[in-house]
Amino acid sequence: MAGFATAPATLANLAHLTPRPIKGLFGDNYLSLAEMDFTQQFLPEVYEKEIERYGNRTITGFLRMVGAEMPMASDQVVWSEQGRLHIAYDTVISGAVALKTISIPSPGADGKVPLLGPGMTIVIAKGNVTVKAFVKSLVENLAAGFQVYNIEVYDTANGQLPAALAGAVAGAPLSVFVYGSEYGKGSSLAGNSVDASFTQFSNKPIILRDKYAVNGSDVAQIGWVEVTTEIGTGGYLWYLKSEHESRIRFEDYLEMSMVEATDAQSVFTDAAGATISGMSGLFDALETRGLVFNDADFDGATSATAGLGAFDTILQELDKQGAIEENMMFLDRGTSLSIDNMLSQQNSYGAGGTSYGVFENSEEMALNLGFSGFRRGSYDFYKTDWKYLNDSTTRGLISDISGVIVPAGTSTVYDQQLGQNISRPFLHIRYRASEADDRRLKSWVTGSVGGNYTSDEDAMNVHFLSERTLCTQAANNFVLLKNT
Image 1 (cartoon, rainbow, N blue to C red):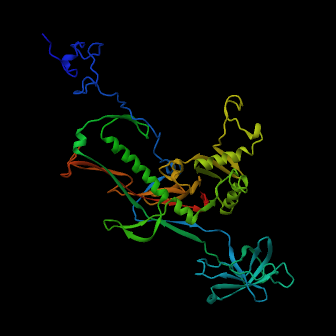
Image 2 (image 1 turned 60 degrees about the vertical axis):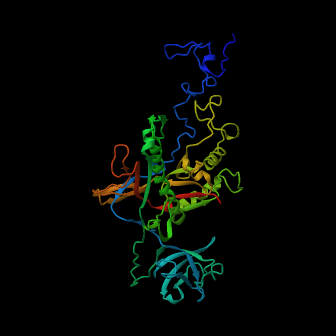
């Protein structure tokens, strides 16, 4: 009798399999997915630990290293910065009256009040040509936009300006500074009263907001992921993994906004009709009030005039500004390496100026091609890479700014809230806070998911908010390194 034919895909045809009473893998009870496509009891191998593909992704830390955070209770923070102690002008033109006059822009022409007065002795220069002169009297000539002074030149027999200094115009002006005074015997003149000059600056806070939302169904679907976070903690996260990353990203935005923000040229409104006016961040303040050095190539790779001489140009400008001795350099990778190359070229040790920095400077043990600090002239510089300028999702995406030199100095001021004098860095953050509300970094939850019941929305919304501004004081001591 012919037997029944059994379809090869049915379990009846799998006579070589022997069931087992326990969940264990044996040679005679294994069902492959090809043999058994109606179940998935043998799942693919899954790595539950998340792979750190980009390492530490956060870019915060710059302001934490160089600044501080302090509360304020106003819509604006105002500070004043001292002016120069001595009197100097670089916009002076020479007069045509017997070559014994000089003219300085009057108030309103350049925003400065002329401080010269009768009896002062001055140095007048154009390039390397200089003479000493005596200020005899002031001639009011405001209609022409200038205040004219009668002078007598010490260095010439007729008291006139020499030919090299005559005929100076606005496009090629003279430079003048006061070095003292001289009065005759029995003179009734009594010197010149000069009011202390200062400049007032201000900044306003901006409000930053963000949120993370997850609906109720996704919360009910459990799926664990083992992570190692940017802040050094690790463990298992469920749907809150995205909330955790949202918080880290928002904290990055807090720092990035203080660096990148700019004042709006005209006030406008957002989609809800609220006023938006911007604020002055670090880069904006340095472009406006700080020192800007272009073509920051210090090893001469792309410029024949670069190298140590280019760096010395920065030092000379710092001297003019009376900068403090210790400075921190936050650089992108290219500029950091160019400074390493610049410094190594000055080293006479080893072949080609090679430096061996560890294991007792042994050439056979280790090679150190980097520098973390150096001294040039009377200044100390501490160099570090700034991740914000290297990351491909931030400033590493573009290449216009290559670094910032930040003074390691403080100013002493009276704090109204603390009721005492405090020292604060030239670069620091002020955030809105009072006894009723602290807006440094607020976080709250709304919705009807996760044990929170504030609305009928089937979701959990985690909100983030901060209101803050950046104070860049003594910006003339900072240097912004740019590529052109």
